[in-house]
Length: 184
Image (cartoon, rainbow, N blue to C red):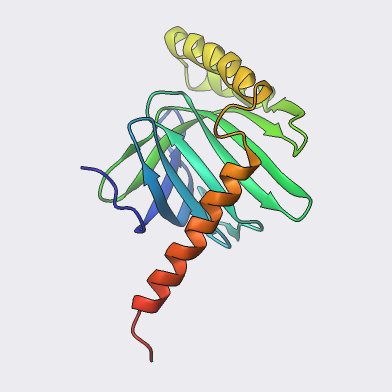
């Protein structure tokens, strides 16, 4: 069953041991295709596994892939669009939420497309603690290389214009949704 464009869902991140990692209270579906689900949000409540919460500072457009072991978040900042990439399982969804498993390694991409891989210590610690299977580690290594190539060649979604256009779609969807809400 496809997700419904314009509707809102929770987003849930888990760890390999199936423990809950993080919940985004609401994301808006912009598009679903055979490759990915694209969502957007701004000032969204994020609840950590320990119950603490915070709100996202900048608006973002996120790409959750169905056949790749990563997701990509385009973050719209006053200084330009940056990207944050999570090595993760392919996305799944049900009536409850959009879901994925976070595999620790991240890539932070600056507006000029320079980037750094983050969280190697966390990855190695969880690899041992949660007994990541060799097959998954091989997949993550291959997907990390693929993701780096995608960043370096500025393939979709690593295009600032794409993020701006999708965010404008989000703003239009929000205006339509607000117009449909009953006034008090």
